[in-house]
Amino acid sequence: METDCPRFRCPKCKAMGKIDDEQDLGKVSIVCPCGWHGYSKEGQTITLKDVGKVEDIL
Image 1 (cartoon, rainbow, N blue to C red):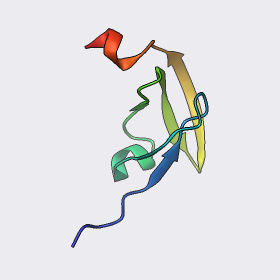
Image 2 (image 1 turned 45 degrees about the vertical axis):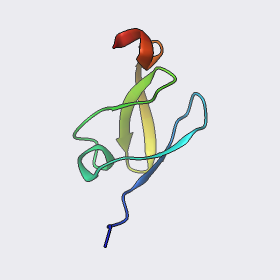
Image 3 (image 1 turned 120 degrees about the horizontal axis):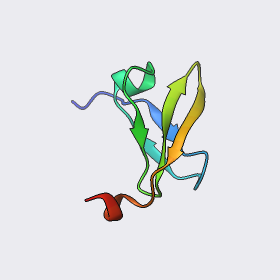
Image 4 (image 1 turned 90 degrees about the horizontal axis):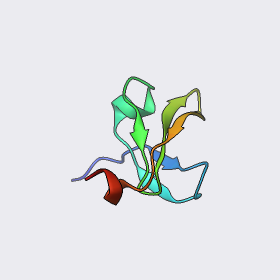
């Protein structure tokens, strides 16, 4: 049985995705495929920077 992962909505592109518990607690940053990079904090998001599209990084 798969456990439910926390859900995340990107503040830039509004896409929904799953994040792990470390990301949900704000211990590990989140990088969205659209390029948004930030942290989760108390149900909100904190933007670090716009890193460009993930494809540009890889």
